[in-house]
Every structure is written in C-alpha cells, then in structure tokens.
Length: 542
Image (cartoon, rainbow, N blue to C red; front, top):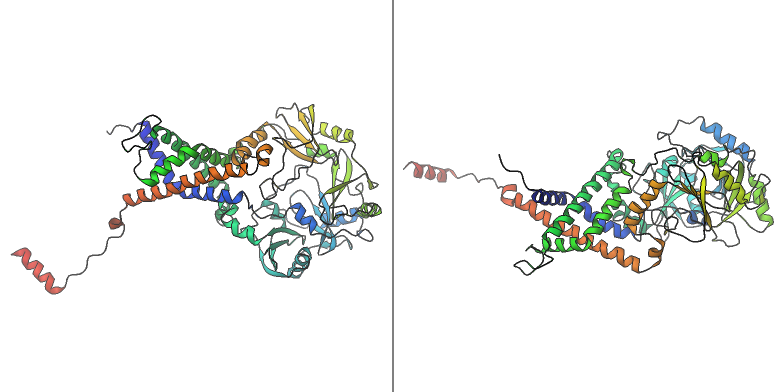
C-alpha cells in the first residue's frame, strides 16, 4: 500500500487542478469586472423614462380611477396565472398613470408582475400591443428620431431581468441616432421598459453578460444558472484560498533561492503568477467569495423569523374609491403652474396618497411632488401618521431608536446609475427606525411621502458587508475619493487579471506535458510498396 500524501502535497495538487479548471473563468471575471466599473448592464432608469414622457394633460385626461381599476381587474380574471406565481410583499395593487405614444394610460399591477394597461381616456383595456402600436410608442419615446421595428423577442442578452417577466414577449426596435439605442416595448402595456445603447451592448458582451455568466441564461441551462454560478464561485474561492496558502509557503521572506529570487519558479509565467498572488491574492479571494455571497447561497441572508408586515404599514388593501382622483390631482398641479409626467398611488396607515413624478418648471426635472388625501390637495404627510404606521410594521417588536439621516452613511447611500444598486431611489433626508424584534429590523422611511424605502434585518446588513463592500468597496467616503477609488479597483483588478492570465498559461503548459503532440495526433503508418515489402520479408528470413 502506498503511503498517504502529506497535507501540503494534497494542497498543491488541489490548487493546481482547480486552477487549471477555473483559470479561464477567473480571467473572464476579472476582465469583465473592470468593464463593469464604468459600463453596466442595460436598464432604463427612472430619470431616463420620465424625461422621455410628455406632461400629463389636466383637462379631459382620465376616466374615474375606480372605473379604470375595475376594468383592469375584470380583464385580469380572464388571464392564466403567471408561471412564477410571485406576489409583492404587500399583496397590494400598484397603479400608475403614465403616457404611451403620447396618450394617457393607466397601468394596474396585482403584485404578481402581471400588469394590465387601460386607456385612461376611454377606459378600455389594452389587451395586446401589436407591431404598429409598439412602433408608435417607441417613436414617441425617441422624441422624433426614426425608429425601425426589429423583431419580437421572448428574452435576449439584454432582457434577462426578472422584472420584465410580466411584459414578455418584448418588441425590439432600433432608434436611428448616434447612441444607436435598442428600445424594448412591453407587449402587455405598450410602455418602453428597457433601452440598450450601442455602447452598452458592445461593452456588455465583455462586461455584465460575461461577468454574470449569462451564456448559461435563456437556454437549456437557464434553470441551472444559479447553481452553476454558486458552484463555480465555491470552487474559485477554494482555489484562491489554497493558492494564497501555497504562495506563502513557497515565498522566501528571509533569504533567497539559488536563483537569487524569493520565488522558486524558473518558468516566467509561473513566477509572475506567484508574484501576482502575493500582491493581490487576498483581494482575489475576497472578490470571488463576495461574488458567491451576492447569490445568497443556501439562503444565508434570509430572515429566520416573521417578515415585516407591509400590509399593516399600508393600513389595508388599496381602494380606488378612496384614492386621489387623477383628474383632480392634475388640475391642482396646473393651478400652481406645475405638471406631472406620471402619477402613482400608495397607502400609508390607511390613507391613500398620490405622487406626481417629474413635476416642476424644468423640462428635464425628474423629481417628485407629494400630493395627498382623498380631496387631492397638495400637502405633506404628518410625521405622526407614518410613525403610527411604522409601529404596525413589526408586530413582534417596537421602535427603540429613531435617526434622521441628512447625508448618506455606510448602510444608506446612492450609487451611480449603471451599477447594480444604482436605480434605487435614495432621497434625503430620511428617517431610520430600529426595532427590537428578533431580526433587529431597520426601516428607512421618506418623511415627505411616507414611502418605505428600505427594510433590513441583521442578516441583510451582514450581506451589505460580505457582498457589497468586499465586492466594490462602496463606502460613501471611498466612492467620493476619486480617482483614488478607481486606482484601487483597477490596480488590484489588473493584479487579478495577471494572476488569472498566468494561470491560463501555466495550466495550458501542464496539460500539454500530460498529452504531448506525438500522443495526441500520431500519424498513420504509410503503406509499404509491394517491392519494398518483399525485400523486407526476405531480409527478415535470411
């Protein structure tokens, strides 16, 4: 029986073969990560969407809200249930008055991401959006630029987001402009729900699409995508950790090898791999490990106890008969010389409220103006109202601390629009409430509107550090220190790229030594000529 290999030898072999197997994936992650620092996955931001919408007309705009909502609910009852079956946490309807092709349209959601559109002027349900309707909507959104219909897609490289599931299939149209945008129009509501510029698409292939391994999305492996990413991340973390340990073992901190170097490797690629690992190995490990945590593997960051009761915060299900009437809201805004590009409704503590988005005298203004009470008068939400609603949010706890945030901190902060968390609205000032429930819940509330902006428990806040911070070093103070933050991220990303590239080179050489060319492609022996064969036989028998 052969003796067992010592632990060090096992670790060397583990790192060698995991590195060979994962070198290309690690290289792709580092290169694409640098691209994503500046170009993100295509999305339509709220500011882009609102800026492209016209002001909603005050006179003769809309049928009564109860009539439109009732028509949408009756139509939805005839539709099959969505395959994913997910509903919003509040279980509440979401209503938005927006514009499609310049005409007012009410979008009614039911929490399952299956929206229904209603013509706000006639009150008729928009049952389908054909090619011509999609082209009109895109042309109006493009504000005069020529638009060409391309095709109807269920899902492509730039529409993998689950938020688009209720709008599929999508009409894809090209805008004839310098930006070279593709616009995606919902086949259910007629809205433009995504845009992708030519810059985002070109860089996206070696950016987000590559980084998130979207080559496994949209095909036969789509259902396994999460498991594939988690599996590769676990293996990559083990490879990085074992490499860090092996690298420290092999590095001469005191004295040198016979070659005069601190690294024992004579091969240049192997030596640079060792040096790059010593320089950036720790960050390589933290980046791969934090990428694993971004997938919430094995539900590590899910709360154990009961979840916050959003319905209790709302004070019951929405009732369109009690909600501010859209026509009256628009008239109130017009009387003050203001306008809205979009209206939305929500409830806080039993009160139905409306928000006017994109109001103001500036055409590019994408800010929001609060409109409250059933009489549709301009007002601010009393602090006592949202505080009372917040008490009902956590039945198993009470508010033990209140904090008014005038500026961003480590837990509440804004990112650039192209980043993963960039689209989240982060107004200031806000109130942060802390509860004494088992999950140590924090709630962030906009005092002007009563909107519940963020909920987090202790596990979710752990994810903030184990994923967001370790992956992008996104503390507000660091993000504001430019170009220092860029140099930090790019410098260590380049070290990781060198680490992975040299792993590809050394791994390829190792595989070639295992399978040399003469064994991989042995030429067939040529057939001897008859005379030559007879001479050979005669020589052998003589």
